[in-house]
Image (tube, rainbow, N blue to C red; front, side, top):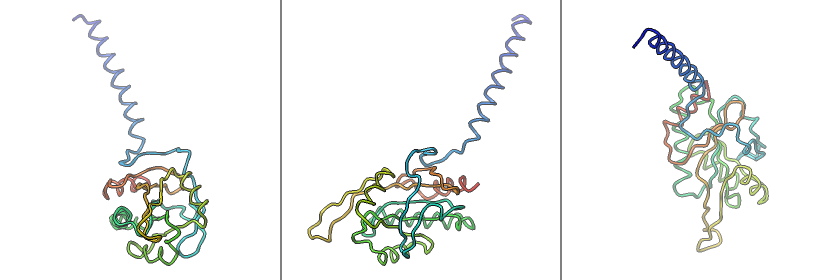
Length: 201
């Protein structure tokens, strides 16, 4: 190999190293979340609901906190209590930053999930978590459409023994109230802890 070819190879290697360095720098600047990154999504921007204490609520009420929002119902046998228990565990694992996490539970069964029932249900998980409900069937349908949430009443043996099929993931908002993540049911506690820590930075 002559001197000219050697110099060309060195120059090419230097250019490649520089280019990959720039690419790595650009890539590393974006957080790597375990959950599905939905930053910039054109849905689920806000809500206007009532909490279990009778207070009207929107995302602005939780400015400065990471908000994790889950849709379910209090008579759900497994998915809902598991999700809320895991969220309570996430808050504990965040330590002092746990106060910067707000858990929200939106009922898809307002017919049975009265404010009193919702308040008692939240007491099983964490006293800071809030249950939210809609006041009309139309409001719930509109909210579900905006959030791309599925729910359906499934008849039981009696008029009041029905159950609810529903989506089982959670929406995660950053401290500015922007939708950032969708975390699927069963993803685990530690990945959500890590994602929330990134959002709190």
